[in-house]
Amino acid sequence: MGDTWITDLRHLLDDNGEPIAHLGNKKIINHFGSIVSDLTANPSAEPRELSVSCRRRPKRKECPGKIHASFDVGTSNILWFCPICDDRGVIHHWQNTVWDTGGRVGLPQISKVTYYHGFTDNIEDDSGLKTIVLEGDSISEDLVRAIHDNQLIDCSGEYGDPTVGYPLQIDQLDIEYGGGKTSIRLYNRAIMLFATDEEYYRQVHRVCGMIDKLDVRV
Image (tube, rainbow, N blue to C red; front, top):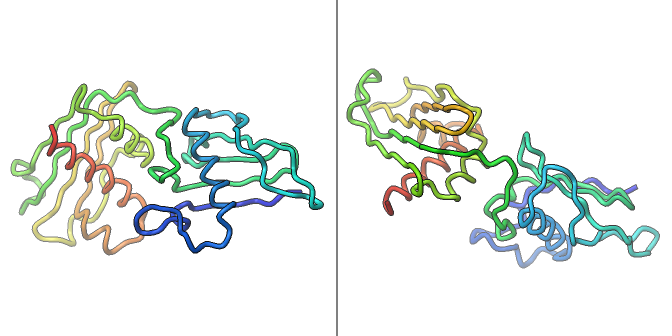
């Protein structure tokens, strides 16, 4: 019977995004990294055999198995296992690490992204918000992956607390794609990031930050 590994790749990286040099077991770091690299190079929602050999040595004999892996479409985690010794695990927060080669399954076909953001004294008055509109070639593959990785397509609604800040900070994302339109309205993003531990605010923050940078270049 193999082990079950729950791996957050952020814990294996330093502040520069490089593998932590002082960790004792570099082989296991390389093992997890190789799984991510191989699967993102040829993404699959169904388990497929990778070129990565199993790392275990049951009864001090090298396991002859090859790792099988797939994306969990619901969570974007990577699920992997060895069919010979049953070593297995889940890898999360692998996106945009040094091992991520960019491949995904189920990327949305996004046709237009409209981003309104700024501060207002009146929740009913959006006229002073800055508007960024991205269409066609201005929608980069990196942005599509960010929207996908942060699971924003199915998150229409209003979030945050409009009563905790003055002036009121508003971020609104309208994402048009093949299956419809997602509208996300977030109040007081900066305060929510500081005052809560909810991952959702960080997910929206990552995408909003990326759109701001794209707007500088377009």
